[in-house]
Length: 101
Image (cartoon, rainbow, N blue to C red):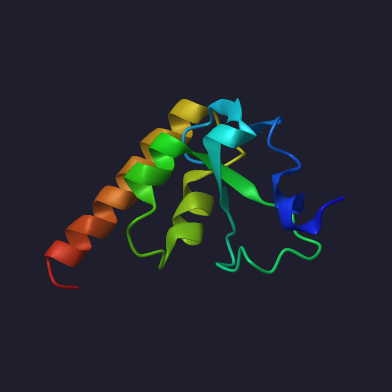
């Protein structure tokens, strides 16, 4: 195997976006590493974001993101419930920042 292209080896598989729950081709997704170190690949399995969710949600600070995902029930509740909960939590976070807290 050509090591330079080893990270491309799974591009044909389908993955699930952790933000919206849609199943997309790996080539249409972006890797998400909840520890923030996607370059250290040894022994890791990654979660994924579809490109629209990545572009919409990933260019903001990550502080508290993992806590919000867990609090919203990521991977444990229905997509609609997760999205509603996550939206409410994100809105509360933005409101808190706007209030200066």
